[in-house]
Amino acid sequence: MIRAYWRRFVASVTGFAHRYRYEIFFRTGWNVILLQLGFTILLVALVLVALSLLYDDVLAKLISSVAQTIANGQISSPADNVFTAQDLEYAKQKNMVLASTGVLLLATIFGYLITRLALVPTKKALTSQKQFVGNIAHELRTPLSIIKTNTEVALFNTGLDTDTRSILTSNVEELDRISNIINNLLSINRLLRPEKVIFSNVDTGLIVEQVTSTLKELATRRQVTFSTRFSEWRTVWGNSSGVEQILMNVVKNAVSYSESSGTVSISIEPADHRTIAIIVADTGMGIHEEDLEHIFQPFYRGDRSRNRNSGGGSGLGLAIVSELVKLHKGRITVRSAPRKGTVVSIYLPEGRARGPERTADKERTEVAVDFST
Image 1 (cartoon, rainbow, N blue to C red):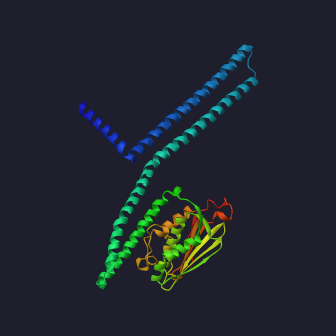
Image 2 (cartoon, one colour):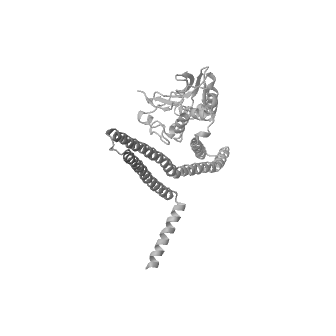
Image 3 (tube, one colour):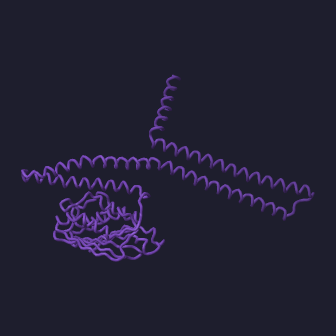
């Protein structure tokens, strides 16, 4: 019987040690419990030490007072009693201050340690997620590129019937959409480490020209024309790739949701609070109010205003735009109504060329949505 209980005990200890070693949540839980136990023990010890010091101070002052009275050979006067009471009160206050300071210091240290321990699984999970998404995205790129290339080569065959050509063309479009999703996932991965983003003066006029040049084929296919207007002051303080991705997603949405023979207007002008406003307006179908308040959510697709038939994307574009604008300490507003088009206004901090940066606007971060009737 003793041997059986001993085996159970050894099995329990071995199982505990195995779980503590290999299960991060189990190990973190026990580490937090042990830290809290250590904090409690130290707190009790601190209180006992404070009480002991207070007792020693009181006892020492009482003995000193009695010894002085005996040495003088007379009964202590009321003034002596008042002096002794003041000494005792001072000793009590001193020990209370020391004990309170010690408790606050211990609470701060252990709070920091517990927070660090509790966040370990989250940090490791985010790191693993980042690596997993990045690896999967990179691994998918090669086979998708091969499939797309083979499909496009097959489309060169003049002997294809209409149905087969339509299917292959649709496959190429879907492959482009998948590639866009992969690129957006990689962008989200990069946003998880904003400390590595390099900021400098960025000419938004050049960025807009690059974006419109890239989207020229899409605009021609949808019979949409671009209209641009640049102010003299158009330099922002940001990351060139980030600003390009912001404008690429916003302008591509404007083109995709514009009606045939529509116009996408892009203007750049100085705004208040030392910011540069980049305004993208389209003459498209607009966005319903119930969809408008959700457009910055990842993978959100409105049933009416954002569908595949209208050239909809992956549902990640505006979510990435929102995060990139926040990263640039800027703000974005959207005004839209059904059949009245959409106006997206992006406000980014102006470049350093015009003078020192205002400290009052340095921490400004806002993402807003304006409803229009």
